[in-house]
Length: 225
Image (cartoon, rainbow, N blue to C red):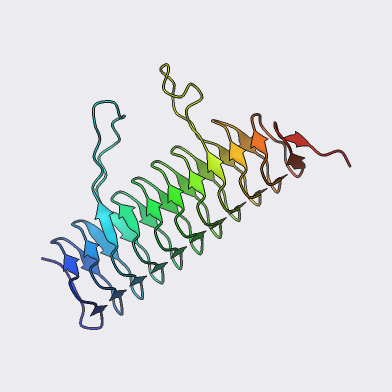
């Protein structure tokens, strides 16, 4: 059975499966579904038409992932409309997730981070505290983002440098704390972005970038002072 306190408020047609734990003063909008194995902390707000705790599925060409179990959403988080969050993920305290966002399995999102409207965060990704991932950004799988990172709208990343043509250990970018990535920039597989480094809008990062620089262009290169 699900554990549901009297202080929680649900809209119409909300579905809550067994083995769900819901904290005090949780609000869930119309037509949302909370799937088995989900834990929702106090004062979490979930919008309408969301699916929370999705179990991942694959076909023969997709890699197998470790079995995802519980989804944990910590207190104070706000989730918009039409959001999907997969099992095996942990969403920290006071996180904001915008409308239409998708968060895959085995993801960690640190406290007070923002995942913008229609942003996608793929599997096996770590996002630190107080990060901002803006509208339509694509965070590929196997990525690490440290604290206080900013990703502008439509930033994209990849984790497969052979685009499926040969066997390769998938590895997304590693973005160190305080880095800022401008609108529509692209980060290729396995690149490191240094602490407090700024990547200009529309740049393509093909190699590691050192700490504290400004890099722009295709390919992205350090601006000379």
